[in-house]
Length: 184
Length: 359
Image (cartoon, rainbow over all chains, first blue to last red; front, side, top):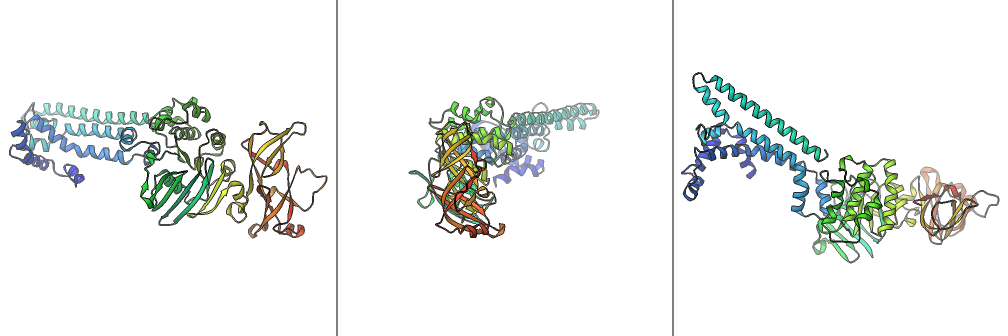
């Protein structure tokens, strides 16, 4: 159930996710109203809201990466650690997590890169306010709506491509470095 | 003191029902074909596998007794386990691997430097596991298990994944470890040479059951058990080196209540060694021959004669005062010598046919 909930944004149309966020975290939504009344925090149409939308959208990507690397962990090493007197948490922090670190890190970087490109959920939940909730694709989209904005859109697209490439290369490089360190 | 193991478990393909007692300290070898259930016994003793019924007791320490609801988890059993593949932590250096169990155990008699010397791993300490050879890895794994101050060392086919050269490289360390640390060892293998070199006691396992258990010198020569039926069957005797005769280039060994001459050895007298006498190298005689090159004419008594139709030969078990020999001869020889259980017989053994192990 939790698993399905976490992975839902991966398969739902982003606009639907944004709309659901709007319902839940909106000023009159069940959580949004509490946040607003108790802490005076407003998520809708703010930078924090844009972050939340991005986080919800990219969370499944990260969860998948982490889960895959944890599942790929060698059970044999866990058993060895047990016979050497290591308890559950001890094994998690000293054996399982260090060995899964490349997967976790790569998952994080890829999630960050995906985050930069978030469109549907953000525009629905946090709108398109330049300097506040405008993500790169939103800016490109906005530029394209204005007559003569093609050159600006092209510049932004270049930025987007560069960021995506950097993200991918970085994750590749980090993964390889860590694997090398782990002797694989 | 003894190690008592009793376990029952139903696997889809085989039903296991195993029970044995073995003296400790000492090395007990679980021997049998692949898939007989030897590794299951090791896993259950370590606590990594929980059978339907299981009772493991070392001395007066109960590690598990499912009938009484006792089940110590592996991390609290203090059973040092050496796996077939070393299972070193790849993200740690050799020295960190070695100290992994040590840092989590109460101080004990096993000292870091002693283990490093014993296993010859001092030059490897700063290396990463993936830069080690198979044999080196296995030595580090043994050291890591020892340093966790275990009450017993469990070894699950530790040499099976190594080639003959690497195996020969590790064997001396294992025999040294046996004598140096006086730690009980439960050792699983399906290789006969490891049995001859290491076993004090032997438990024969086949398809989930114990088919024979006892001191290695008994079990290896019992013609009613599978070990003696093998082509490479032979007696194993634990001997003391009694004297060296430098002029004749011979050494005299005492073992099993008999005397054996072997080509001169390079070890001090009164040291212990093992010898293996292959069944096909033992000649039987009714009366002492004269003018013969054989040095060893060992008197004994026929205990059992077992036919081996497949090889058109007969296995003869010869009782010594303490221990036994085994000889493979033809049925015709039995008739000509009129051999029968209880009759005296002479075993003729060339001194060069006696395999002196770990001396």
